[in-house]
Image (tube, rainbow, N blue to C red):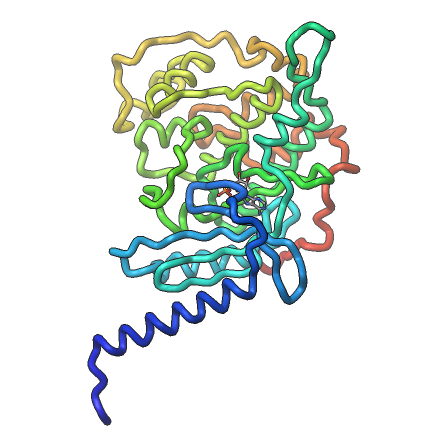
Length: 345
Ligand code: AMP
């Protein structure tokens, strides 16, 4: 058999992949030049699936030229994510990878929670006064319920998010909440790729991660849900640090500086220092607006989500049964009936 030089083979494969990438870009036509937003893993554009005329969101990630493209583990993870089917998870519809770029096609959702807050979170109480946070209690309850339900679905499929924050919670026109970027942290492995310009927020990050723990569990998502719940109640981020250590101190100021009695083994975490300032907690219900917006049961749920010791945090499954949700308004929550898919569990 005639021998083809290895170099020529490589170039042929590269050319084939680039052609396929162009064909994929034609399948989905970008409708706006300006990206809808930039996330941790790449820019997101509004596009149209030419075959069906449906609007989609195209996430495009440039791959590092020095690397050998997307690792096979990432491809495996992403194919797993394609199987996820839940009304509170943004549907990953299509995936394509060339040597230089990775494209993910998602269902299009109108706005993210950050934008929703700006548009719907505040009202003018008095004609001359400042705007105040007035997100209705039934909307707060519905959002946190949908968030916990989506997270529970992914946890039951052994997928952890690791970067839940209002920017990657999308809200459609019916008030349905959909979680974006689920599983991408694992697929692309932290640290975050060099090609992102986004300043990665650490406000929603669990304390065990901030303190340098190498081992962490699905409970990191429960913490983030707690931080988001507090923000839904007050309109203010719970722990808005400008660095990891500043975020840790913001957590300690609200929840009290933990010691080995409160959090067994904290002394052994790489970034914990015995010399950290010792703050005492006043209680989460003392944070302005929390008790009024959440009521006593909501405060208890918030406390359960924000426990220091990961294994003491309430699981998503248990949280959905919490008395706070007894009167949750099901008329504004999408039904899961048509997409429960038990064989994946
Ligand atoms: P992400 O990388 O998921 O954090 O996305 C960055 C931004 O892009 C978000 O804050 C949204 O504004 C926008 N975005 C992400 N996914 C979608 C989607 N499926 N539909 C519409 N906009 C999206």
